[in-house]
Amino acid sequence: MSQASFPEQVSYVFAREKGFVRLPDREALTVAVREDANPLGLLEVRRSLGTVFRLEPYPKSEYERLLAEVFGRGPVDDSEVDAALDARRGLESLVDNIPEATDLLDGSDDAPVIRLINGLLHDAVKRGASDIHIDPFEDRLSIRYRIDGDLTEVLSPPRQLSDAMATRIKVMSRLDIAERRLPQDGRISLTVGGRSIDVRVATLPTRFGERVVLRLLDTRNALLDLSDLGMDAGTFRRFADVLTQPNGVILVTGPVGSGKTTTLYSALSRLNTGRGNIMTLEDPIEYGLPGISQTQMDHKVGLTFAATLRSILRQDPNIVMVGEIRDAETAEVAFEFASTGRLALSTLHTNSAAGAVTRLRDMGVEPYLVASTLRAVLAQRLVRKLCEVCKSERDATEHEKISLGLDPNRAFRVHDGAGCMACGHTGYKGRIGIYELLVVDPALRQLISASADEHDIDAAAFEANDHLMDNGLRQVIMGTTSPGEVIRVCRRETRHAGI
Image 1 (cartoon, rainbow, N blue to C red):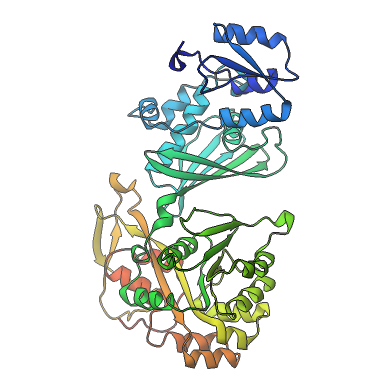
Image 2 (spheres, rainbow, N blue to C red; image 1 turned 135 degrees about the vertical axis):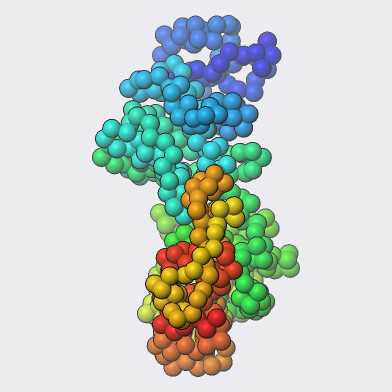
């Protein structure tokens, strides 16, 4: 009998409870049997497979690993998913094919749940979603995609699907399916439409079941060149020049989800010429970077940013990327590291570039060390791009002109998106970064060393360069985004933009 003609695999729940599972990739039909398996289960396996087979005994611990490998494979096959998705009703057609049951994975066939989850992953990647949120409520599940930063509900199936979906996702990400009281984190590697997708899985117990969030990390995003980030020519030129510095600290700041990691990865890709030793310390590692040594932090065993950075000098690095400066110890060690002649890149959570300087000072880093070691701070936000199909031009309102720092007595033309099929009726499609770049020159170095306040540092740094609002306004005037988007993500500047 050929491999292709073998009978179907037994269900996951049967394999877990009875201790029998068919081994894939064997020339002869072979069933693994756990050392403490119930012999009566053998009759059920014989009836299920319907033909003769070989038995291969496994110790309990190895059998558990085998289950995770066999049932965690589940590739997202485009042709299979496309065939399962009804042309008119999309994901809802997959839900309709699932029989009503208290626990679907306790049945003999868990294929409908697998098809639903594969369909969700396929559809989310196709629509450019960054996250899938699965929320159980009293009488329904809410399944939402995060697209261009906003959550949109795409499906609302019965709540009875909650346990089945959570269990299947846990199997795929090799988590403990029996543990429902504690949060868990896992990972799934998939190929969807020829694209390698890394899926970070996080579960959280809630009142009505486990909440699951899947973060979809497209490895292509890690390979963006710095020129692909949408920086204006002036900011790009200045930032590229800063990256040529042989030593010092370069920081990227902004709120969660503002694209800081993508910017750092793009910077590292530009620096990765093969002539230097580049290392990263991350929590977690989001993308694999070819030719760069990446280390995953593990706080349970003491592998923290600060502790690892202290030890990394023995590895002779030229450039180090620290995922985040989140405490005083990491900040101090990073600056001391850079002061030894290395280049350090990291992120910091502040609202502005100038705010990063005062934040470091508040963390306890000495002003003289910040002044002598800090090379630049890039603050950034992501704004949604207007859909090219449905955007239209209009006059800016008085409120918009005041909020954008424009002269309210002057006429300005701006754009909005009406919403169409191409953009999912949102008016927006894709996102672009807006930036402000503080480069530490001799005048700024003197201000920082003298412990000047944030306002003075900000005024000196951006006298002739864009603030975030100025940079966003350029995108508004070019018709790339709407006034509302820039007003939403940028802090209000007190001076006029001067455009």
